[in-house]
Length: 234
Length: 234
DNA sequence: CGCGATGGTGAACACCGTTAACTGTTAACG
DNA sequence: CGTTAACAGTTAACGGTGTTCACCATCGCG
Image 1 (spheres, chains in turn cyan, purple, green, red):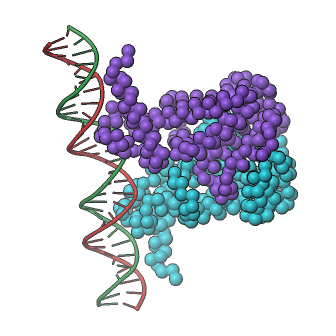
Image 2 (cartoon, rainbow over the protein chains, first blue to last red):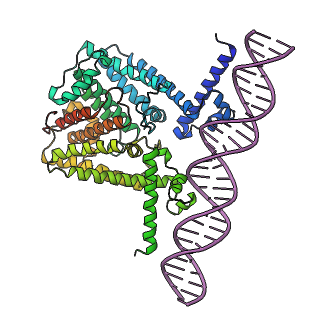
Image 3 (cartoon, protein in one colour):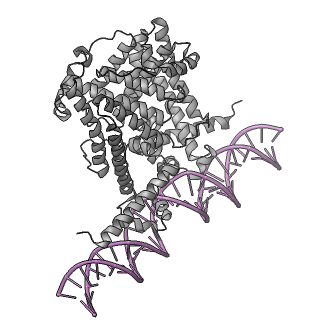
């Protein structure tokens, strides 16, 4: 049952995360300190330990929240259109827009993660779960687009036997897509990620003043590879 | 002239940077603390201020060193072959190899850089200069490949008028390449960056166990877009 | 009513980057 | 050769961090 204290507690947790996010957008990741958050809502630093086990847990919680918020934004953006092909472009553009409007948050979500090479440490933190829900938006959409109109299979000699083996192994995870389609789906996500990271992390300023047009061209290229007929520029 | 003190000083600087890097590979970026570095070579923390103006300056110095080391490695790898097309693959594969062998260093160089939107703040820190020298390896090689055998121009309607305008503006910076070729050069670099970042930052583990085959396939695809005849897989 | 869980506090620990004042050593110059 | 100033290093200290501990108030339930 939900006692009154539970509601009060949930409200305080929300306040804490809101303050943390405010500090995040104001001064970047390094500005989200335990004491700073506590100061923001007139509390002492140790008080926060009643709500979060550690500083890392707090950040992990806001990471999860950010993933969910981003996911909701992308879903809303996607449902702007009913055409699945257009939805693929809407989601991609939506991710870029969100990243550019929230660079600090994007850096927190997709920047260099902890240098811990604990590969076998399958941390099921709320952040990871939220990241999975986020990724599912792309995966499901790509799968639906494929079902409606299968992608043109890339030539067999491009992928190679080993890659095909790996892709077929992951086939069931991708709604039973054939390896070529899985490859194209991965290409879509990889190129999208690289483009947005480069732009929001400022590693493209030396080459382009406004990466928007470049982004659109790349997106058209990717859509073409997926067999979508995308409208020409302008 | 080079006095004895200058040599001693240079040696100490090298020791400091070596210790910093040791800590970097051992415990990631956050482990490179001023006090930790000092402790590593039996010094007091304030002593380091005789050699570096601040903690940030120290890190910037090792960043510059890392860029130069990476550049030297790539140049050596590139000169393995005399064929320019092969060199493009060698440099790409070399960057991936270096990133996988030195993930902490790679994260320091290419992880989320400062969220400072100071576009007009052309900081000419040693790190930026070294980054330019690094980028020049790719730029020069791509330009040489283009001179030997021009890239197949992408269709005009793919790029769009605005992007073409932007690319022609940056044409002289790219050895006078036409906008289509500049676009393909950027595509080469963007996709390469995205691929390596995703793999080394562990954002590809959910989809692929060993991203090597996928990387090779992507590289062949890029090379094909550049008009190179690349050998099929296996 | 009473009692225990809950939420909050201040003090303290160990670490961090940085500065200031101080002390030897060492090179350069009259 | 002796003086002097720059250099390299120290300790002490300031403000900052995440975290733990002992303690206290308050609120809700049996």
